[in-house]
Image (cartoon, rainbow, N blue to C red; front, side, top):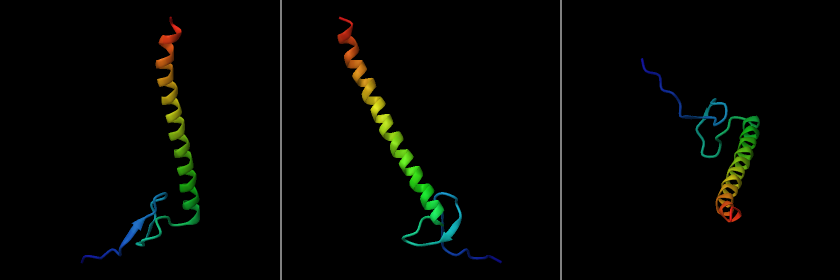
Length: 68
């Protein structure tokens, strides 16, 4: 006999099954807070990477001028 599984989605953080909804993608406030923390950390790393790329490009353009 085949059992039907009710429509559901999984929490983006912990993977727990939650009822399908257009608004909720997290199962609890704890998961929402963890997601916000991860998002902040990810944004910080993106800014750091951009800064490092800018510094490397600046060094590539300035280094030949200093050698003369």
